[in-house]
Length: 243
Picture: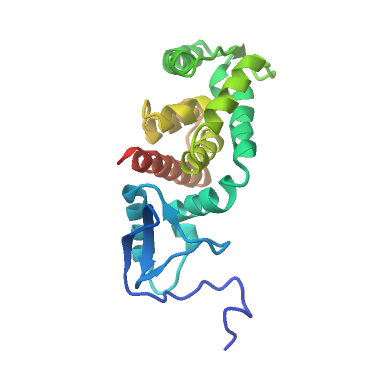
């Protein structure tokens, strides 16, 4: 029988009995039968908060006979934070600013009136919060034609993102891509919105259309997966906020 090296797509077998959290080098790590788990680049997976390490360990413990990394989203985020964010901190901060430059929350519909009213009622307060909490000013648009945002706003967003540590910045970048919105990403990172609430706001237009035209099976599955990811990013930030 061909081994895993002959078939790189084959999932590795579970090689440990227990995954537990241990204190290591001023942080917390996951020990698999006493041996520290490592990132794909070979670094030890040491995270700053016990609550985050507990999330990581729970995913390792939940694996069955094989290790399915697709079912370990918190570990994948941690891999990114440890293997990429430290070396690409500025690039990730600029990526958050790019989402802010075309933030979906700033593009209001032209019609119908009922949808416009929904957007104003639900998006308006979050935009106002972001302007006050982040110290920025956004330009709202109507329709889909791109609207430039003030350079000072994008510089401020970049600076705020860059101030975060590798773990928070990784979560922020992931959230901005998930929601199509730096505003919503910051709202979840700062605890102003839950992941689920932010996800609902990010797909307000879609939900409006689904109420009228229905939802097909493929779209429903995609929505469920994205909603799960929104819950994940909320857990990520909540773990970082814990002592």
